[in-house]
Length: 361
Ligand code: ADP
Ligand code: DAR
Image 1: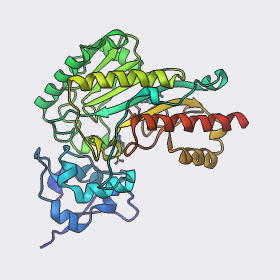
Image 2: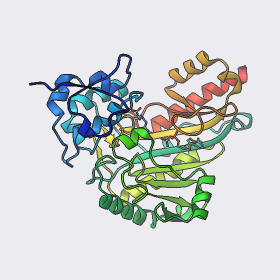
Image 3: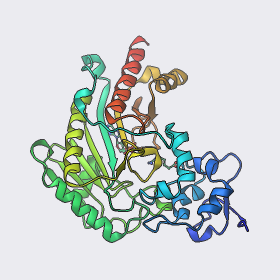
């Protein structure tokens, strides 16, 4: 006997309120609303993954936040398998990656074809940042991890970071008990990540905040690792200016070092495993903050170049922010089905095309 309908929206407080099939208002755009059919709901509504994370928790962010793009966060690597009727459709639609497709990772910066920009072009780029998300094998993802597991993960990452040498050597700062001076300095450096947004809150990613969270950064403040934010590791290389190769080379060296001492959750179909399906594969976002005042005034043309080169236009203060002073965050759009090298190449090719057009204008 199928369950009754439950209207979705902010009035729902926990998965206990999901007593029936979630129905979305007309016009809802999330992939959850598109693919969570009544048949899939009936199949999974009382199911849990290998780490005991319920299907209802994996979909609750999109059930509560009607403006979600995806609306789903995996509770563990196993969620992608046991809830595959939903996950496979989201992954195929978003990444154009079919269940039989393979993912090949490649972090070899020497394969990047990015001749240095001319000085006038490089002057248009304020800063460059490349990040990857990674999660440790043998643990659930953010929606399912326990307070004790977060501390185990943090200890493993801190131990790995303590073995960095040369330009990667640095210091770890746990968020819990952080003194105001350190906190204000990290905020001033734009290093301190905040408690997760309402999308992450809804699927339990902010539980026990700030316990088990922390930030490592090197002495030059060009390399940092966020511990237990949306993913268990966000490995980030960034610096002022346009030296994309240097930023990628540092990231690759650091990620390879951490992986040599702490195994990452990975498989040959989905690549590196992440809590949000949009980051699967490489979980790499390579971005520049770049001044494009003339091109930005021609919105359709700006977007057309972005689409042609598979890059995304964002604001400069995070995922849902706007541009400030004609500076835009331009980054690779793809994550899965192409290697890390290929995606940094996407970003480089995209900004070269935008710079050329800006100079013509
Ligand atoms: P991500 O998922 O990559 O962390 P966000 O857009 O939320 O994406 O960015 C996180 C933070 O990193 C924001 O504070 C943003 O301003 C900063 N950031 C992103 N790209 C750059 C860049 N190229 N230069 C400087 N800061 C950046
Ligand atoms: N708000 C979620 C996240 C989409 C991608 N961004 C991430 N993972 N930070 C949504 O479904 O819209």
